[in-house]
Length: 213
Image (cartoon, rainbow, N blue to C red; front, side, top):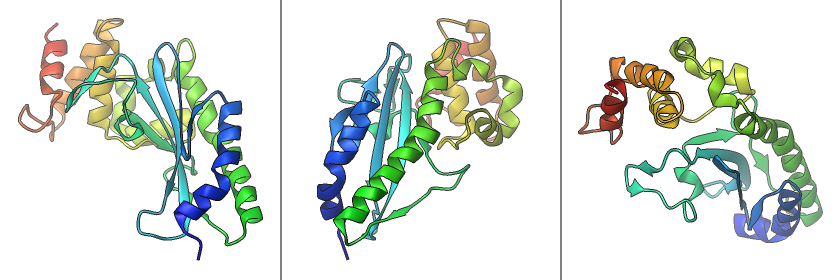
């Protein structure tokens, strides 16, 4: 059975070439690009339990979110897993897995299938984020009670975050450009029955500050 390192050795050159065509830079399984307002990443992830399969993911981080639980963010060194909005390229909430082959030729064909899925599922969502007005501008408080389904309806893919965490991010993003909207999202997050207090959530003070602005 082929290992993830061997699979990576076989396909990383082709994967890198395809990602560079899409404007990304990187090595191995991790590729990033930057716009005026966002950090964007696409990456493959091997099976953490040692199986011969991988999944594909992408992430977007708004530059207006400049700090997290560990303090001020260094955008030049920010790892993908710390990007605020993380998504997969499967259908709806399903994480699609691709099985490696023991044959290099078949693995190269597999990468082409993965890249095709990235083009079909990730790139349109990335373009929605970056559009003017962008994806985030389309969200309203009325979307939040059924947040995950509404996110899928707007984008075609699922997002790995809670409605409360998304509301905090929206409050931070719009604090300096649309304060009334930022306040609505801050107040929504604070109103949740399981809203974290300042001892468990680093963003509690942000919510209080914005809601009282």
